[in-house]
Image (tube, rainbow, N blue to C red; front, side, top):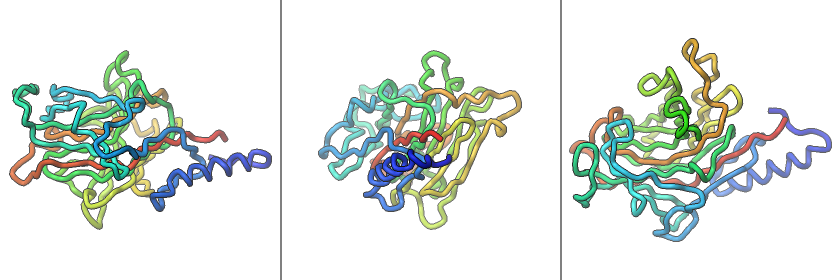
Length: 283
């Protein structure tokens, strides 16, 4: 996008400086200057605190979530702040025999948080600095769903997966979209392989830059996939032109990652340093 010129330049400069300052504690994390910070959660509360309920809502239950997942999502101890500036989502072995999942007594618990009804927006740069968990059958994700899901259902609402990783692919991040005619195993996206070390060894910045008619996926500032309506199947609808909300979760098992096995060590934790949304500035 073009920068604001002449009389508007000082205003554009101030917005850019503000966005840069917001990212100061993470070297290299500043977004392009055409984005202005619109929403964030820095997870700076005390150790053991729950997430900010004005920003996040917890999904609960163990019905498989459309993927034959094995965890029961709770609204309690599986998603807490660590006192060091991180949200910690913990997947662990369940000790509560009263929790029922679709396959019987739940074997695992975890958490799934969403901004539905709290923050929903159309277009922007959506980014999170995350250290993913590891292990066969562990499935962390940072993603988005169309805010009209209750009215039109999935996949008509649209889904944008900013980051997904499955334990058997420790170096690979996936970015995908789902919509009518291109959902589930037929979702459209790409993958990036980190050559140096497994993703779980350190924090990484996962982002999408979503503008009218285009979605770009990035890891640590490197773009690895770009999609426009021309990349959809013939006749398929581009359903990415209305408000979406964000989700963070760690699933256990399911159709894609497969089951945990003898090599899987639990508990596993996903650490989220921040989630930030930047609004594109006007041309």
